[in-house]
Image 1: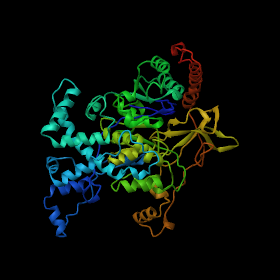
Image 2: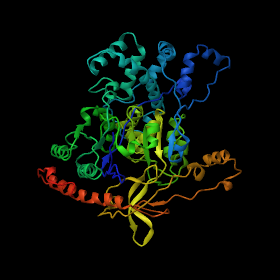
Image 3: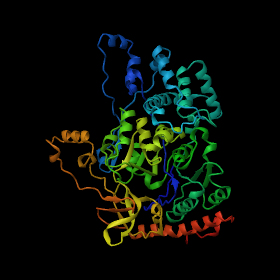
Image 4: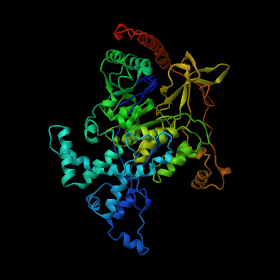
Length: 573
């Protein structure tokens, strides 16, 4: 499934310029633990299995566990084009673990893991970030993952005419003979209360996923962007993938606009996400709708070109880097280190950890396979809940951007970043043939223009609403091996020097620096200025004509006119 925020795609497969949309497909999880304040589920699991553990501690003969395994592997060739997050293995739930639930340690574990973070009507405004314990949340989510993978096969064996009957049967089991299922259901209610709304488990939601499609998130302010994106997809890129549009109630997207979008092209459905997930907990607004719309959509995956990306095929989740901006920012990496002593292979090589950028991910396009990375998407949605985003997530990043890869880190799910930072597409800077100005561009794994975010205006953030003349583009860099190139973190540079067998930082060979952004002017300089192909120019500039029609219809609708989108010959626009 896919959804996009103002992101036109230059390739043969997707052109998008939406305002609040995204791409996705997701499933699967990992666990945590608790014994002795240790985050590794493997360590608490070890204490469960070894009945002599406490005795060994008293005798000073504690059996230290080896570091967690990393069995997830990818071809070496993939590392030339993608940065891959190799997660730590977290042991599966077993019958031995179920037996432990009846012990003192098990009772303590359940009491701590089931403690509510907040009441759905509680006002946390003005509270410090410490009001939510994200380290404990990570432990609970990893434990939930082990249970989810253990209980789901049980759910599949239950008899019933539909998911509702199977859910009832699961609850009966939980109440009678299966304490681990009872623990799982209560833990799910604590962590993801918005799921148990029109359904009683996440399993029935998971069972709805099938096929491929495109997902947009849009309210009244994004109406014109969605028109432009859909018509670009249908009439320029010739994609026939089904489209689902999500909104947040009648006050978010008016009935007239819903009808316009529903009839403007073939195979379009609209859904109110608050009728599928519990908005008392989500309290959605703005960017936060994106991962929840991804969860609620019935699509398993989407769209053509992106789904053939080798990083996506290898991991089930494909992300794109943002621009490199604002060096020396430490809050993000400090926070992640404080809550996740166990991380995948990705964070330590990230710009966040190397202190060279306050922005890591661009969430305009997110690709997630919901059949294989469902639990990663659940963890991402959790970080976009009302209290989580207000107290922590959105204080650390610009909206939802970093919640995707950090959500996957919470449950140790693999993911891939295309190894190219946000570049630019547009026109030359006046009087400077070495700088390109315009919207943020992203490349495919072959280094060619794929999609962009930022719309069609020269610089909407600075109020320059003249349409761009799309002629040039420039890469944002990032394809060199990050850690060999540069880091502002003094401890990490010592690691780099040691791993490379060097004597000092003076021996470190730095590769050519990436291009540099002039953020306020939305211009990039320092790399080769490249010319768009004839086809790419035709696609990009062709979206301007569609956008003019969309904006005019948006203006008329605001004035109260009732419009029929089929009066337009969109192919000829």
